[in-house]
Length: 274
Ligand SMILES: NC(=O)c1ccc[n+]([C@@H]2O[C@H](COP(=O)([O-])OP(=O)(O)OC[C@H]3O[C@@H](n4cnc5c(N)ncnc54)[C@H](OP(=O)(O)O)[C@@H]3O)[C@@H](O)[C@H]2O)c1
Image 1 (spheres, rainbow, N blue to C red):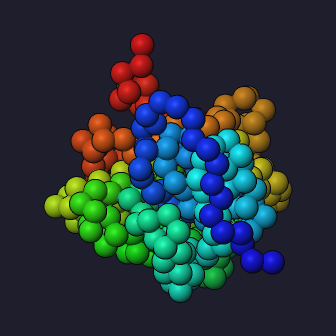
Image 2 (cartoon, rainbow, N blue to C red; image 1 turned 30 degrees about the vertical axis):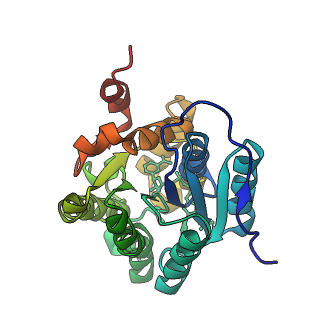
């Protein structure tokens, strides 16, 4: 079954923050990406909702159109440059040139010590978390430059800064994504394109579920306990919280944060919440 074409609903009054923008959200089918796609749409953007699982991207696009927004569900594998190029082309044809890119698609891989990590597993984590973001940025940048405005939000992780035994591939890939963001910030600046990284906190998504599901015999007692403690001690955040941060970072006001890495906890201060 082909992925359905653009889904349009009727927008409701007020002038939303992202009115007139076209956003491309990778990993938009669930978790942080789905919450972000829905929020950007609620705030006026037309949103390309992109990931590999058709059912999920179609479901999110339906929800957006049912509540008055505009969405284009896209089957996308961020590691495949043809798939990425086709997805951006369809977005341009059906919604217009992308001016917001949220590089959210990511995966942790199996958390193992370096000596026990298969090269294929290491490469896969880098392919999705780093090369995927590069391929999408590479497609989005010319469209953003043509409109002399753009925002690239890379969803990274505090694991980039805090080393943990067993998390080499994930941590190193996210540290690389941080540095990619800083370079994008320099390259984008002349065209009014800001690139910003997000550390979303520990969020209640499939990724955390999967991390909890690895037995202590696979990932070791310490990581097993850490993943389960996140749930058991109630520290998991709702995906809507990092989505709120991402949406804020797509506003004009947030252009000043070009090249910065922003943690979820900073949102209230940045927004000047009372
Ligand atoms: N949850 C946390 O605690 C946490 C903490 C720090 C950072 N993060 C980061 O937040 C981002 C979102 O994760 P999440 O927690 O929301 O996890 P999630 O619910 O598992 O979502 C991951 C998304 O990425 C997509 N994806 C994976 N591989 C892809 C590929 N090759 N091509 C296109 N899409 C792909 C998945 O869709 P398909 O499988 O359908 O392709 C899914 O939509 C990730 O970058 C993650 O590293 C999460």
